[in-house]
Amino acid sequence: NVNNAGISDAVLTGILERAEARVDELCGRTWSNTTVTNELLDSNFLSDRDYFTFKRPVLNLTTFQVNLANDDEADNWTTLTEANNEIAVTLATGRVTITEPIFNQWFGETDINNKMPPPDQRNRIRITYNHGASSIPADIEELTLLVGAKMLREAVVSRSVMSGRDEFSPSMIDVAQSRIDAMVATHQARSMRSI
Image (cartoon, rainbow, N blue to C red):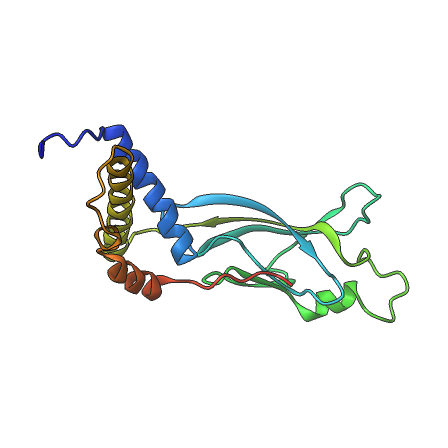
């Protein structure tokens, strides 16, 4: 029955929510409304001056903190700011760089009492920031619908095959894959992480 495919509104809503998450994953950035994120990052203070947020684009950085305690000590969070020229922030890539004067002050080779803890310790950096998009491009909305339609086709084909029907071919599922790939390539942000 063309008028009743047996798919409830709740199922369609669920597919579109998964499609939105999949588009974010494929593009390596968040297209939804502004979201606040609080992340902990590991560090090797012998070489790490650059840190990258997990989500992009960053709309604004709320806090950037360094934990100066050793693993066996209570946390000692110190806040660094752009206003004090302690960090430099690139919002589009989510990159935060500890400035050279601060890095050298905290980890100078000649500083016997340097404040930095030993390298390779976990949860050394804490970043709080807002990320997302103030508006969603029309082609991203189309991409979400294409990804959702593909998920729906896969579900319908799987359901039909399980009920004994086998007249489906893979090309029926991948009908819009080249369009999906082209749109993702246009908006894809490459993932970057601190080393």
